[in-house]
Length: 224
Image (cartoon, rainbow, N blue to C red; front, side):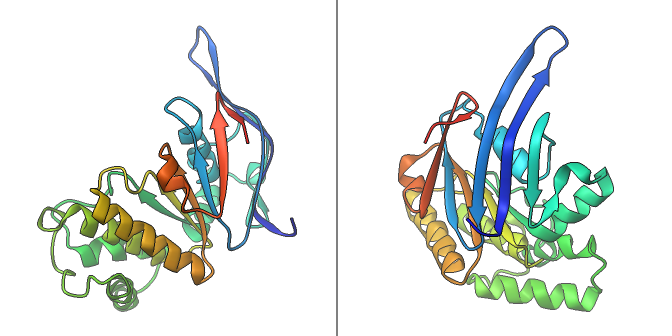
């Protein structure tokens, strides 16, 4: 694979509880090409959440090497790591993680504030992202005024507004009914068709089946 956007080499993550060491990931090798749609699938306790935290630069490996979009993660201090995360990755969460009592527009615009984007441009880009996802008439609504599917679309708009290289989705349909879940999966297909790299974390084989490639994880190891 030439120029992978994600490359893990012998990555392990061990949690030290003080009394015992718990291996969550063990010698993981994984490469994901630009523009791929990959599902990482495994049961509860398999290590997929730890994998998501490593891939998303929310945690660091105990051992091994992670290169994200050409940058060796282990060489970065915390500030540089946060900057790389902000620039390269858009997160979509199972529980949406929207700011309460805050409009959809402000929720989507918020990540841009951390990048120093002007207020006018933040609003314009947030509006464009929401309109792209069919929420042009819901911009002023707060999360409690939106359905679950609409909240997740706001979450996707927020993930996309910074134009990240990778969309990292953690159980994005887990709190949705089948219709809303199918709509979200349809959005991922459209984004992938437009060239976006998507990594989908799930325990659900039906959800994983929508990806071009499945990576099975079990007991902290890549199984297939």
